[in-house]
Image (cartoon, rainbow, N blue to C red; front, side, top):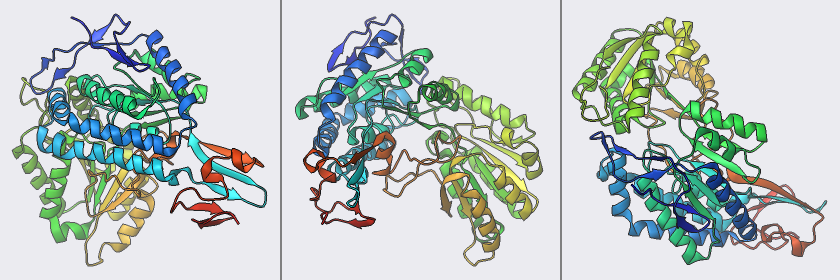
Length: 526
């Protein structure tokens, strides 16, 4: 069978690779008909050369040019919505509505347009001017960016349409998208739209390129190549660290989102006050999307007693009654089972679930595990094994001191949540846990589950290792997400006519706040 073409240097062409792969429909376990190539290193290197050539051209473009591309791309996607969500439905098992068409697609388009606005208004560049020394600095594009998308968000985190892609483009960088093997056809349709947007907005060949798959070794060569400015990766910890090792050896920045169990602490007063409400919120959050969210609540800590028993029983009943959703593929199914086994080996026991339910599709029973606080503290690493999917672990602590000790032994996570009562009886314990928890998470929540990730300028979708590879950056939240794919450009005594417009004496953008002599102002240098 003929394999699908790759997008290299502005052209759709037959791959030179001899290896191929096909995606499966996880809802039926059937192999989908399209055949896709595994690109050899020579092809990857061609993409790097083309991206470097494109960067030399776009390096002088204003933010308006990148904004025009992103808006044109969003418009092209809208023309292909039905094709995109249909392909994603077949490749992931996610329902067309509301998950794909009404949820993730809306977010994808919003991200692209928010990124366009950021590119146009230039605030992300943080212009800084010291008029006394005539030293001026700003953030500028870093160079070609390789984006590795995950399996669980085929639209909003896709390597050629998601947040990393939008941020890299808005910052002025060409992108080499490395598609995910779970949804290649979805990615291909996005790439067709992106290439058409490149043509209509006058972007150079090689500005946006697509390869579907490489060997692990060639992936490592890609992220460490001297022509690459940076990489963005979302996926498993094992693969991400393999790429990080290669990138670190070369000194090339790589921004990783790896794994997170997103601990939820439920304090005694909250259990007394609204147990049933929290049961519903937790169950809905944990099982949403078959648990395949990076912010899925995989660890719950609660105080021992009658209320803890009632909470656990109620959650177990809801888990058992809810249908088991379809997992993204056979690899996710194997990984979920392995994660559950790893947690069991620490001494945790299964409250409900942990069994196959439908051999005709990729799935596993909704699974709730339980362990003691003492057991957790004896082996905190083992209890924090990630079971990515519709599973969670309850930790029952015998005292406030034990709850606090558990907090101190947490690994880095994207989120951490504390439920407390509204009358103040939990406040002392809340303060103690929150003070420690904030050091282990990128986002601290109160009285809400962590599953939602708003595309807000204030959002931090990041956190300490192993949630990410660097705690100071976010993958969601514009304009902050753009700054991952930037370099700090400094100009010392450079003549004004040679400076980038945002560093000249006259402010070129209405409303742009610049740091001039230590004060934020939208005015001009006096």
